[in-house]
Length: 240
Image 1 (cartoon, rainbow, N blue to C red):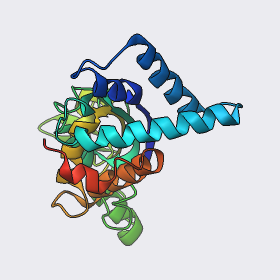
Image 2: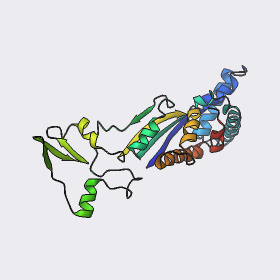
Image 3: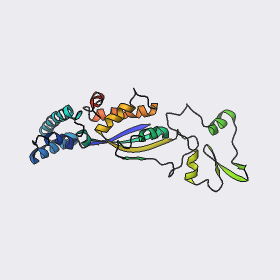
């Protein structure tokens, strides 16, 4: 399994929220915040400008985090985008349980629109399980027949079982034989407040599936590389 942190967006908006409640926001300050964030995030060839932008932005982020763990609407402006490659389907379903917290911003590999080969599984399950078809070939040198008949009907061999003849290319039927260990990919977005909740439920100290816990930890590692302010200690404080 691989986890890619595509981007963290909305941080400039998040910083701006600091100045709205007490009416200290001005268009000029807004422009400065966004300009500083751009120079800090993307860099600028002007070393003095970069130094100034970095110092002001880091101070603002620290102030933001000072209040945002309690006033979580501020964290709603900061959004994580991530892509996950190769998690097993059951683990994807576990992650999908949080779709509401992602504002339904999750798109998954479909078992209806794609085919899976015999024995295809996520890395987590490799070496741990053997589907019956694979076990018969590898350990008993036995091959299941390509066709079987029952009640006068003919069935065609497919991964993990048989499909009624004439429906062997029907993906709605074929996916009935797919195992939960098949690898799957998905992309999702989540704001930082809701991520704190998801991480607390799915991290290595929880009771989730091992691959799901691994996903949570891998993504959090990437978040901390890019935005060290949002570390595990900060997430534990977020009131959500």
